[in-house]
Amino acid sequence: MLKRFMRRTGQMAVLTLLTVAFAGAAVAQSTDPVEGRDYTRIDPPTKTSGDGIEVVEVFGYSCSHCAHFQPLVSEWKKKLPADVKFEYLPAAFGGVWEVYARVFYTAQTMGVLDKTHDALFEALHTERRPISKIEDLADFYAEHGVDKAQFLSTLDSFPVNAKVAEARDRAAAWNIEGTPTMVVAGKYRVMAPPQERGGFKGMLEIVDRLIARERAAKSKPAVE
Image (tube, rainbow, N blue to C red):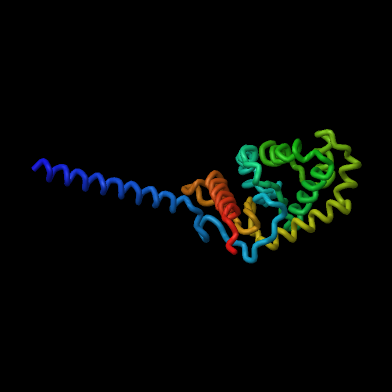
């Protein structure tokens, strides 16, 4: 009887270990991003520059969802590993979207983007300031130490015009339909899932997993 009990106990232990193993595998599979649910594959993929993993957020200052997303992105990008190259890309859909895209690249060109990016979201969506006309925007940047005349001349300069045109072409190549959208490695387009699957936090988790996927693919030896 003792032998039978020990044999049965051993069988139960094996079954328990197998159950745990299968459960672990199921969890691993469930956290792997699923095409069509968590992201859309960009076809054809666009070429990225450098050896790092490119991550781009396509956004608009006039977009309230982007304003809600920005604090999360701001904290998230501080913790990115050195091999991840993050950048913002303003959506130049036309109208006020293009005006704000010009404003973004003007601030970038003048070296004041870091201190004005979050501040403009705050002014528009928290303080509800009516900042949409060129003169209003020039006044806003003047509050942050930017020369108003230089701001206005840079807004319609050749470098800014070129960057806006490039942003428009990149967004079109990725078939951007709304903001905020994250693009990973020129291959994957990610938008926020429903709240029950994490919302904006879930979106960044998906991006993190796609980054890990790209990193793993880069580390694989080339097949001769």
